[in-house]
Amino acid sequence: MCNVFSIDLEWPKDVSTSPWMPPLAYLIVRGLIAAIFIVGQILHLNDFIDEFGAFYFIFLTNWNLILQTFTTICLFLCAIWGYTVSPESSGKAPCFVKFTTALWYIMQPLSMIVVILYWTVVNQFWDPYPVTFSSYWAHLLNWMVLLFSLFASRIDFSPKNGIWLIIFVLIYFVWTIIHYVAEIGREKPCDNYPQELCPIYDLFNWNEPGLTIGITIAALVAAAVVIALYWGFVRCRNSCCDRGAQEAAVKDEAREPEVA
Image (cartoon, rainbow, N blue to C red; front, side, top):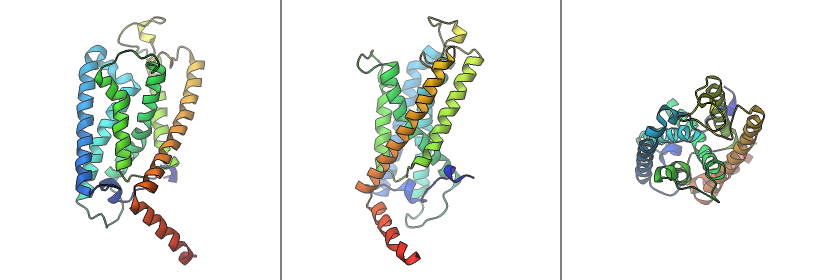
């Protein structure tokens, strides 16, 4: 497989240890994060499933929230697995761990993208309308918890890992086309179109394809910017918090003349 899809992972260290807490404490934190996301998902479903029904599953926010909940559970399972293996040992990461890491590459930057889109396009932060706690969870608090988990973990992130986010964005892009062509519509009528042609989001509307294609291109550019930002977050974490990563980098530099 092309190297751009490869998962660069030091097993079990990257999924079961933290730069600044003992392995057992990190395992407990992973469990708490998974529990928080499970509770948040239940609250969000409880608040919105009656209103939207099956249409709950057409929105990017809800795709994102379900993905985050699933991934945090998988990360907790990976941490348990890695905790049973000696951190000093190294080897090829199991397929389940690689799969979970690929999901992590998606959910971390995607969480920030959803927050930005929601508070600038859907519910403008300069003139917001009231929302429930579960909506705050889905559009802000979850991102803050994930950002904490990013700095608490040792999972690496580089620009090439952003390919997984781009794939996810393109999958959702295809879904919006299917939604339009299949005339799925929304849970209630909208102002300008028959109910079966109501778009998922007003600004992402295949009834006006020119504007929607332009928004798609802008979204891909924004995704690239967020990917670069998360690369910076991880580089900052490694340089400021992870003494092990610093020592490994020094050893690699010291080894280079010997190899030459």
